[in-house]
Length: 255
Image 1 (tube, rainbow, N blue to C red):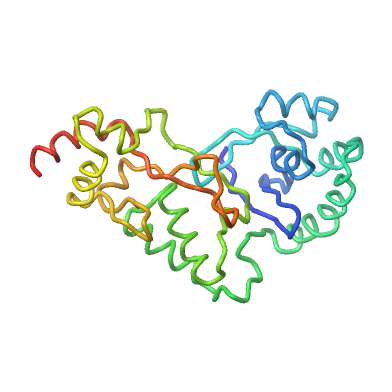
Image 2: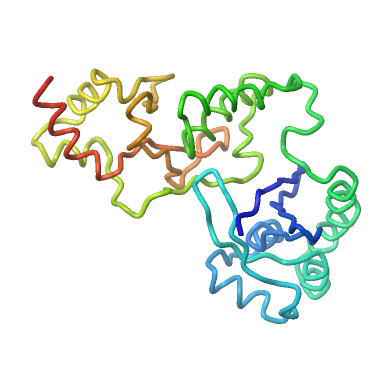
């Protein structure tokens, strides 16, 4: 079952949540571990970290993220309290008070929560309207997430993806290639590769950064590179699904 994600954050903590049809609230364990300062991030590491939590209070959830669907380890509300109650981390108690005093009451009162809620800088309906436009234009997945993030940033001055601690991952199992790697396949320099892709309407440049457009959205994937800009925002790079190689070969011949 797919679960839509809802995001809570304050100046110190962030957590993604989802809710079953029966009203059970689930919290993404990875977010809790990161907030408390644990280094575990892999499924195996997280499973070991919460091994003492009763089985009834934990489970895997298929969650939709900007990078595609992912199986994530989650805890119920009871599981979160049980885990935090036995944690020796200094932030465990403040985190538990935040979950119990803010997150859970808000979910029960409104039925949902998002990073766009109660933001006076963001006019009502802006994100929803932009999403409709992007849907009509065929912009989906990572590209849609980044496009909506730019809308959010234009009003608030900050990134919704960074606020929600969301990492974009590749929604494909194929090899992802940089323009440099594509160029090596055809004996071309990276500048020439970018020129061909731009000339064919696959990408354009925005603030010195290449972004996919038009037909390019079928092959392009914007991914985090594991680095941060000076202001702490994630560095993201446009890469290309290896399925573009045959198409690119035709483009360069036509160019």
